[in-house]
Length: 464
Image (cartoon, rainbow, N blue to C red; front, side):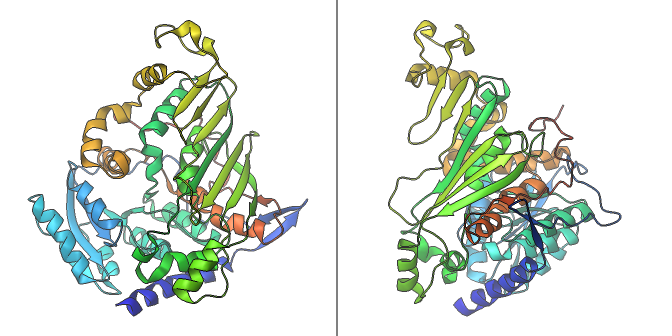
């Protein structure tokens, strides 16, 4: 069985390598600039794409190892959903997820397994949405094939592993007019949603800088990745290979491709010490590309700055480093949740002890709690109790799935589109390019092909 999944990953990896080699570049004024392919004739932007409403969304799941079963569990709690098919390389995993449906009193789903089972699932004409929870190397081949069969796609993070793969997702979504949403759950965490609502209400003034990261020592978890695929990916790839958890919430705050866009980045990394040691012990590897700690600075068209970090190797508390600096206030989630404002930013009716606030320190706990209650995001307010009950990283996974199905059922643009998937995923390839050239600045491609300023301001679509 291990051999099968390694072959599956190897095939996908060869696909990715082939795609990477097809993206050319040049150096302009000291900046590495990758080619941006022209849109093919007959292909059109899917910015703001709203497909026909689907009253009952019929879903097929591919990948029932680490993330898939919990997704099946969450979907069992959603209204307007029918779980039609389940697929994994291993039939015993499919059977285990069938038991989830049985526990919820739901009909058994069609079963697919083996190396080609996922293709059979995608070809079914009674599936609206294909939900992909496989290793990263398989995301693009599966997402592209599903869209080509007329299915909407939700794909785990990162959606793509190379620039060419990012462009392939964009081009396929534009050509097929199908949704392709990356399953970035951290944009739905309660603090992030509340802070986004505060920002959209103007509490922080103009946001100048924002931070995000994925700092999570994976030492207890490496053995759970079938065939060691994740450590092997990191062994081969330098750069911030897992940027989206930190970057997604920041991009929504900064209206990325909704009035602003990332234009260039610079990356630096440390030597690989713990990563290389792990690879020697677990794989007998003599080299390891991924630095133990990677730092990236990104600039936007409007002059804003994003600071990203990646570290999955060293002993540190879990940290997504979510923070923003505005002209009138500051927010920070780690290591403790806190807000700081100019006192004039807050109305006396909103918070207790309004006169004694000080912009040089976090507001007191009772003020923070009052603000979070006052500015709770409407989406979280509507579904928070059920989300916490169902769970999934404290409920944010359930909110993500709820919003995906809500938008499909109501024929609305999704909260995250294929351009988000490409923009947030391309950081891995771009940081690697910067690091391999002594931290040279690298231009961030415009996956919208000039449409990044047509929509002003990020907003969640709501049914009237």
